Length: 222
Image (cartoon, rainbow, N blue to C red; front, side, top):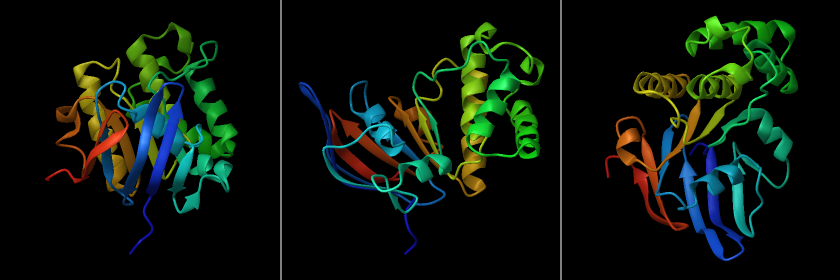
């Protein structure tokens, strides 16, 4: 059996007055598109932040790409792309400058960055905005820049928290196509949403969260 891209065992995360994740078990195979679905407040964003090494748990074990997140979180960050529900952009940078900076932070060479950015600008429909300040773009365009930023270092695992927020219908369709293309090219995609129908035709497997508890975990066909 191959090592899963993501494996959680007994994960519990509490905040004052609330249990965000309660003894969560989760396993995502390499190359899958896995949806985490639940209403607002179900614990989806907390789970995503734990997998991105941005939050610590009170109990349980977390392995991402075969590595315990408590042992080497920096190595995991080099291999993971994380899109927050409300991503922060560098508003005083141009689109190109922001993507180039983020690629450099992840250690990509100048030549690799230039090639990757050119491809991402075309893929995300941002070529015309290459030299525009991020802060002058519409919310949907800024979301496209944020997605490009997540992909610029060619991560193995993509963690998308409510990625379709702020996108128009056409951009949503393009995003779904992008996620399928990433999976077809061997990437693992973990995506959250509060709308199951938005992801039902896309994902291979699904976890349904309800107030921190898992109500279902398995193939989408079930």
